Image (cartoon, rainbow, N blue to C red; front, side, top):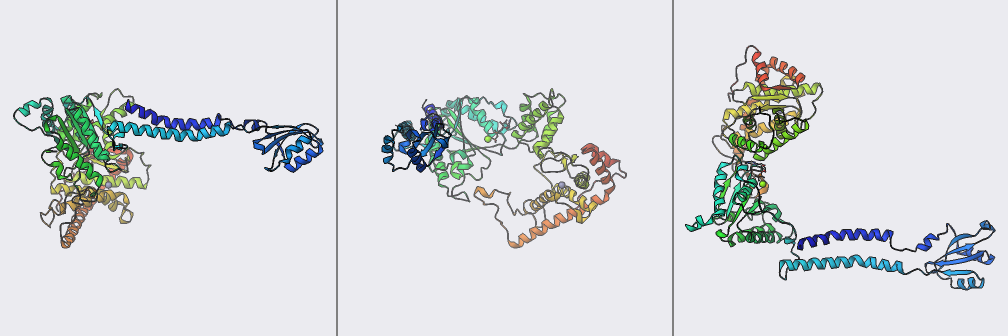
Length: 626
Ligand code: ADP
Ligand code: MG
Ligand code: ZN
């Protein structure tokens, strides 16, 4: 009620303003009569006096406080017809009236009706009065609401600052593939439902649980599921919403949030993106932000302020626990950390099962094939994938989703929208050689993932694409696998060089080269896979904007830096030489594959391998020998 009033008032202001202008324009009386009497012809005052002397003027109507006269005159100049003529009168013409009287001319003065001025006055005052009244009303309201003096306007309160869901409707069964995290949380549900089990033996119920994991892995979903399972309300706010322009607003929001939560205990308070407020204080670029620190302090105070047994459990989510302020991670605050990872094959399968429940899939589709094709996909990616496929199927008026739509959607999620193929031209031929170069090097190298397909249909930024079926276990990669990937990535450029010559190579390989360099660099500086030896010289790339660490400041001497660069060069150059050799050795089959690719636009992995095998002698697999 309180709120709705304010909303009505706020909404009514612009409406009143608008209607005021309309009203001014169309309804307020103006010097109407003058306008309706407007005579088309005009004459000067001097000429009017002459007319008077001639006795041609019959009637004078004075308007506008004596500034304007409309005269009726008749005379030979006017074609002997009575005409209305407008005359501007000089301000000082006092003798005029006498003159008119003497001449016995019919005079009529039309005093400007003051109504116009009156309306103007009212109009001009109306809006400010309304505004002042409205503001006063707002002031009074918010003072009442905050229940005390000293808070002139509580900005922190005036916005919808957090969401509350009485029932989330999400249950644990909706969350798939993150079983460890779920187990951890099943206990939290018991805390909420049967706190006495724990308090009876003197156990402290945890106040906060921190969910750590990459975006889209189901952190929010999991928090909702806890509330849903325990059947308690779910309060949520995002850390970025705390951080406001005005100092103190964030803190007041925290206060409000916890006040509401206490009134509704037992409940779940979910703080998303807690790193936005909870970043390590006083470090890095973002350090020294007063507002953020105040907000964080308030959050810490609130978390200390309630006893573990009040039934509020705070769940926070972040994708970077390492940058959080250590005060947040102290016991009694977010003392439990649960990490949620990007799902593995089994996890993806389980998530696909959950999300395919409400979709009509072709019975021939095996979810495990999809799961195998999608390493690195998060839960959100998978949900999105199935939804895209459903949309595609609907667009084609299919009765159900077939593997074609699924494939298309995977390609789309990974590489972007499909474009139109190039017409046959030199550059199409060059792109074809480039892609076949990737594919053949990848196929002939023993340690490389197999080719899934090669296509000349552009997608996103790419004008041609070679897809590989990734090996399931992406977490442990051997040195020879990395070298094979480097060579595979160099395959495109190498084919351009061999076929078209050094002068004709294109910018199309820039992305490949970026990957090549980054892989080689990591071999040297992170994985200890070069002659420098098993040293870790750089950390995983960290975001320089996130404070602490401040990027990866080099932890090695200049001398080592030179050796790192040398090693990277050696690796890339040797890989390049080998790749060129593979292309040269297989030029005949490459030419044939290019012709097929240009004709068909896409070659599927099995067909690709078949064609290579047809070639006698069957090329032996290359082992990279670095
Ligand atoms: P996060 O909060 O970690 O960024 P969300 O919980 O918002 O991710 O996930 C977004 C959507 O992705 C969810 O609504 C759900 O549809 C889907 N999703 C993500 N992870 C899972 C999972 N483990 N099981 C089922 N669905 C998931
Ligand atoms: Mg989320
Ligand atoms: Zn390429």
